[in-house]
Amino acid sequence: MGIGRTPLPTAVRGTLQRSPGRVWFWVGVTMLLLSFATYPAYPLLPFLPISAWQKGGVGIALAAMSWGIFLPQAHRSFWRRERPSAPP
Image (tube, rainbow, N blue to C red; front, side):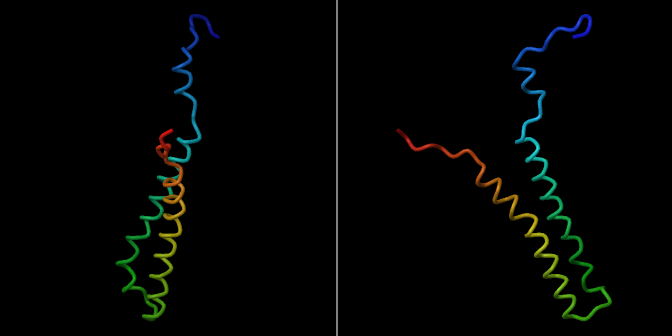
């Protein structure tokens, strides 16, 4: 402790520490933003200098990438929610 510093109350000290839930929240937000970041690419597909079949493949790959990033986080956040317990 320094000169003139008083210790923080326990309640305040607990709120200043990072909790694992807070980290997972930001991981989830990042994954959500990455998932939605693929959408601006869809309007550019018709202008790519590749065949129609390849454009379809790129579109499917973008959709798979978007859902592949989004679904694991959505699944995790759904199952981590507090559920009401059964009455005694």
